[in-house]
Image 1: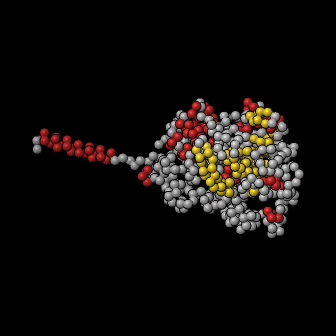
Image 2: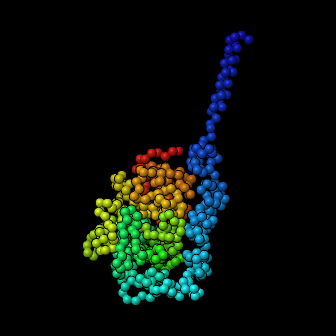
Image 3: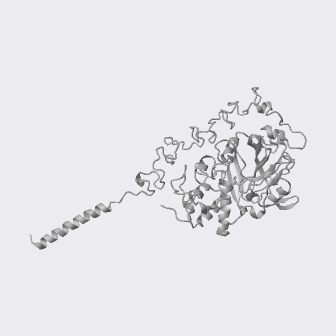
Length: 493
């Protein structure tokens, strides 16, 4: 073999060797987007480093899934061993079933198979509703013109009129008795485009105490009423409407009690402990006819929103009357005045600071064109909207699964202090959807799980979970605009 031919063969062999090395090097390392050591092809959650498998196929990772082999359950907020979907009382570790559907757990219900009775305070074998003997004083028989305070403090009366809260027992939207005061919120919780009439009643010689960022401190004896009415057309809220329900929050000596009353007709509202479904509810909104099933919540469901922070018990508190949402003008019989100033001037509120120290977010209404607002206005307005609609659960030390989710939407906290806590580039916890990697993707609303949740009626994903059967289109547009204008850091992956 001559030298030339030898060199040619050697070159070919070298090329083959290099080609072989190239093939070896070109074999891609399996992609692992979340860096959890499990290749994407084998990872049920390729963009969530905290999850890799989903044995029961319920879309909740096994690490977060309290029931990883049961596709119907994934959470147990009260740690009683019964999944939330099966647990009639998901926030109460002492209760799991409600055989008679009266919203009082079987363990506490003296009459677990009778939906009309649940307590027997005097132990005579006759339920309190029939016996009319709750506590040592008070009854549900009204007399005189004043409020029936004894009944409010001691009885869950069968009729709203038993408490004599309003001058006209058939109209809970106006003319409260004694020192009852109407109040409005500058940005309100959405409930299927219903109109709301809110009143606070305080016992004689008592006052509310101002709190900077949280709900006011209310004395024992306080009663807060909220009546829901569906207008025929939202463009004319002073026109025809149907009163649906009146909810009471009563501050008794043992804590706050929530009682829902349903208006089956115009004569009076009756106690609806087990709630009520109102089919074929109709309203016209911006020219669109909506029809849906309106749900009056059962009394036990009130803990879902009103649960006290740092607590998984049934203890509840009000969530609406905060200074920032009351900091607005209202037209009283005496003239137009700021609501906080009016309450203070009339001896109902103490501790009110200088108004320069009171939070004052922009008011949100469905008529507002959010596209015309400045970035700072959009930011402030969306924080207020998320606070009143979501932050009663999604807050620091919030109760239940929402409190443990890491998504914290309180108005008083600056987003920039912790972007992830406000959902920015935050992986959804105990829920989620395969099409959404993060709660919020800055600049990309359609990729953000938060927007999806407020824009769906799917019970698995919608937020808030309770209180609406329709989508608040104007709220959705506000959140969409907010996310679209974000210029925070890009999310990884």
